[in-house]
Length: 112
Length: 120
Image (cartoon, rainbow over all chains, first blue to last red; front, side, top):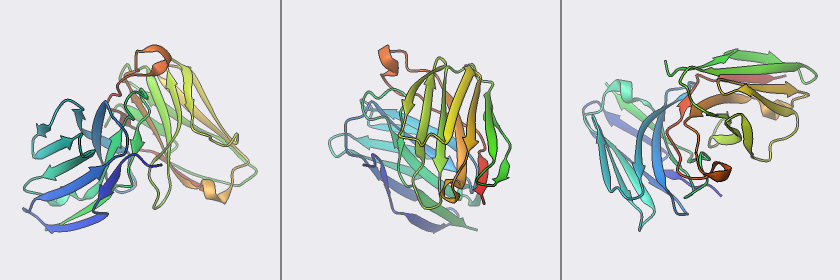
């Protein structure tokens, strides 16, 4: 069954607002990753958070990880129209090496 | 530009054709992947290669045949496909997992732009 599941499925906000996306997973992990995909293009890696980390920042991105709840969140602050994309979490199943399992994604639309 | 290129970007083929997708990475990675992305479905891992050896075949039908001649190149050979095989095919690369059998922690993956495949 699917490892990562994102919530919400779709999110529409105004430019300048913050966007929060959540990811839940089922098994133990070594790390969790977030990716962005613009329509019909390849995925772009955003951030990797290890299982012993609770929070990580990269520019306007903030990722949290709660291994006790098997959940993660991605916060994009001060959103821009260019942030419009699909966002996916991916987990490695706690020792399956390079085998990542992706969730269905959250479609984010930022209106200018 | 992620350092991973894919050709062709678009491909239309009949069910009796044979075609190949090509992926090349310029990042010095030792692991490469094929994924399938269909409309309204999560990204599906198809194949994984670590140090040119196939370490994962995710129950992919034999009409898809991967080939990894070296760490920089990955091919996906297609033959007698079905219309339901129409999808975006993504190639990715990463550092290889160095533990035995390719297990261990995962690394960030770098994706190519994909090949949009339509089977008629």
